[in-house]
Length: 80
Image 1 (tube, helix red, strand yellow):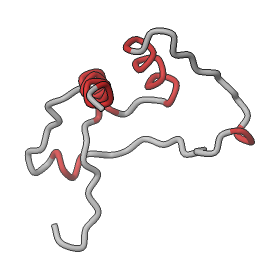
Image 2 (cartoon, one colour):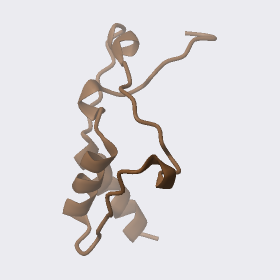
Image 3 (cartoon, rainbow, N blue to C red):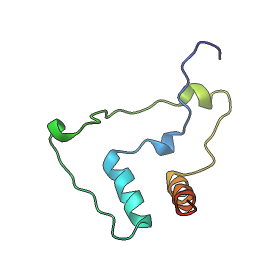
Image 4 (cartoon, rainbow, N blue to C red):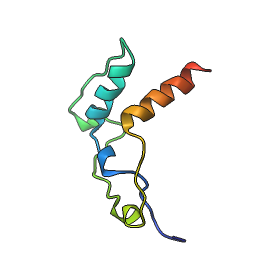
């Protein structure tokens, strides 16, 4: 593994930014997001599919969904 690049995650976590916003919106009442289709206003213009095959080949599988991760982050945030 030394001096190699490893994408750590799961193909089930390959979502668009809009899909991620919709999942966040389910957990934070009153939180809204605005869709802007122009790249000029997108400071994070990255949009790509991440391949997790390499890490999956050694037996790694994510055991938490994005939905669960968001819930956990909200719990941590609320405890501050």
